[in-house]
Length: 95
Image (cartoon, rainbow, N blue to C red; front, side, top):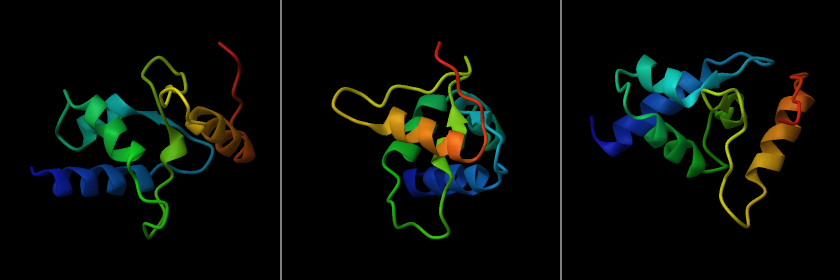
C-alpha cells in the first residue's frame, strides 16, 4: 500500500466513526490491515487538508490510552480536538 492509498484508507475508516463516538489510532490501523502503523494513522490525520471532501472527523480519533494526543509544541490541535468533541456531546475530562 503506497502513501496515498494508506491516507485514503485512513480517511475512509475515520469517516465511519459516528458522532459522539471515538476510536484509537491503533484501531484504525488494524481496520485497514496495517496493525503496526498507528503512528502513521496519526500522521495522516495531522496533515489532513481542511478542505478535503467529504470532511474527515479527525477529532474522533484518540490515543489507545483514551487521551487526546499532543500535536506538538506551538499548536492548538489538542485544544481544537477537545472543543470539537465537547461540541458533539463527548465528555472530556482532564487527566
